[in-house]
Image 1 (cartoon, protein in one colour):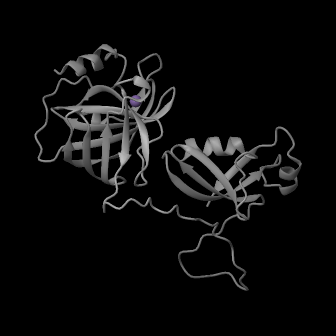
Image 2 (cartoon, rainbow, N blue to C red):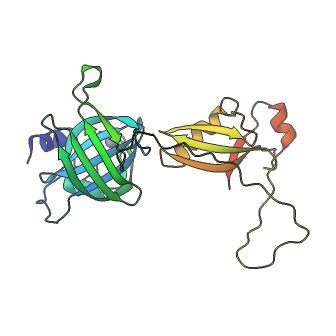
Image 3 (cartoon, rainbow, N blue to C red):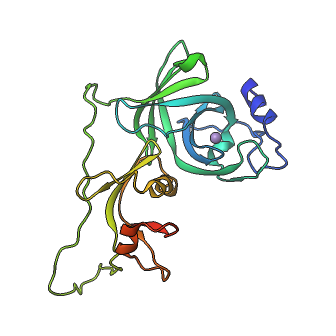
Length: 268
Ligand code: MN
């Protein structure tokens, strides 16, 4: 058992959590594996793990793995986890270390591209969501050796960051007759503010169809959206509505902004 796996066991009471104990021998496979687990603990974060020397080298990434080339996020180096942890999903009960919900956000194999003397790694990931090259750099942020950076590398070696894509709401078009062919769904016309929701590094913003920022006005919606989508980066199209007592969207209730009126966000 590695020194760091001892640390893993020391932190846990393995009788009161379903997390693996790390007793099994290391598996034999050609390609080493990686996993990213969404860990909804006291603080939501993503755990990034690489198979290294029969265990999982691990980093806690509060804002999720950066997706845009050139982007970098804090990655807090934590204790090695046993290899079996790569398939762990579920509830860590209250009172245990890391209590909360663990879900696998992505997994796959990786190639080690480079290993630096200071421990820094460059890896090429082959997952469902993550496909490309990332560097893990022991940046020693704030003088703490645990504070590494995870950096999305550019594949082609150019230095221009990818242009941020613009999104507009998908609006209805007028038609004289209902479509009758297969593949159509009909839904209620919600009466509120159409808003593009953008989640980036775990923070959500809302933008109206005219490009106005609605984040401040609907702070709770933005906060809940970031948690509901279960991913740190995405764009969704939806409508912010105020509901009346019957659960119907009411534009006047929204404009009056009566306290206690439930505000919801329907995603299309
Ligand atoms: Mn964690």
